[in-house]
Length: 571
Image 1 (cartoon, rainbow, N blue to C red):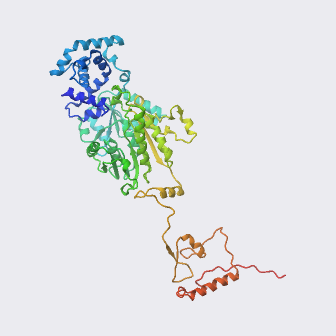
Image 2 (image 1 turned 135 degrees about the horizontal axis):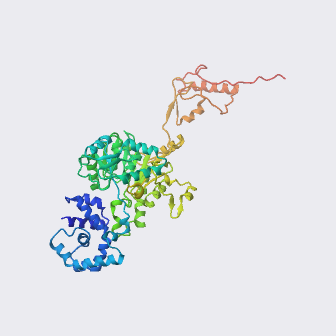
């Protein structure tokens, strides 16, 4: 029954046990569109409905009636098309119809409004209506083929790929591009679409355009994905053949985007700790045709960065769980829960996010990491990035998508401007990217691109010496080297054992291969004629010993520099 399912979803949303969109689309209800509309509209009027329930004491008189069910029924009777069911639910509301209607009239008089829409909270009135973004899955089709399919289905393209490129190039700055994009969106009419001005594989349709039953969606040729959600994989930009980690992969839109960027080459290691979300991830990657994805049901924090199979990972996408405060369709602001974005909750999320990002940067060969959230809070965004970079000095921020207008908010702490922090060497977070719903026509989003700094040979050696081994231990630079045997010129068949090649400097002016050593600026030892004679005597004595009997010493094979002596003047 539609009302029961809507009541169940509203109950879960109010308890913070899911989002409207995820709960509706996972429902077994046959009419998903009708269910979604009923849930959203009931939540929009929930503050007024709650006042009516309180004033009429309906729930006290009908104790068997659940609050979420009463909310759905009151919406239908007072603001919708009327109650479309029979039985005890209809009878219960009918018994109190007069009192309920009178309560609504009194609220209107008190607020000084005539129309029901004027009763809505300001947050609902200011709600941004987003366009429908469609990402072309390049693993199954091409942008041109998808555009042609829509044109054949009577859609009209008002901005082609070439025209979008031209407008972007002609724009003077990122602000101009933002305005061009917003202005074009206002002109979109039903059965029209345009190519996005930033992302080549993204198409834009009017709001509420539904493709869930379209053949391109069912076959995986197109993916319904918000523009802001496409930015992380786009900015990570792994070249074909790369090994990539998607650290928090479910439900799989970004994972399939990475696979498309790699053209199904290389490898994408997709992690998620929740078995149910892993199941969704598996279905999504299968539908998208991604064959280079290895799904791992494991907590990313428990992954050993030194493990052999991750030795070629150069790119990591980190999109951890967050408050979701940037999602326009989430409708959390309608649940009357002031604690949904409490300081305590945000700090708890930020602590986990910082651990995940720091762990990603600990992979010994990773060169590029993208960190993203669908949150509007600095606690989960700029502050997490700054906290991690403070302890990971071998990474730095890269300017993310210069053609994007809205940047990271330059504040490190409450009421402390970034200019103050720059004096102490903190990174400039304006290199990060923010998506603002009202200006960018997307969900609220944050993206930071972190890249490894180019190090000198000495710095690179230090990094290698301190990086973890496969067993989790670290290299010991002072570990004694194994004994090496090095032949010394002057002996034909015998060798001398040395513990360190550097000790060869005490064996004469010869290198390991017998060539003469260039001492450079070192002071050469002066030998007198007596010193030369003493060396020859020692060698001859050595030949009388058992060890020396196998050796042949002669002036030909014993290389000794004879000293240059100055002639004495006759007085």
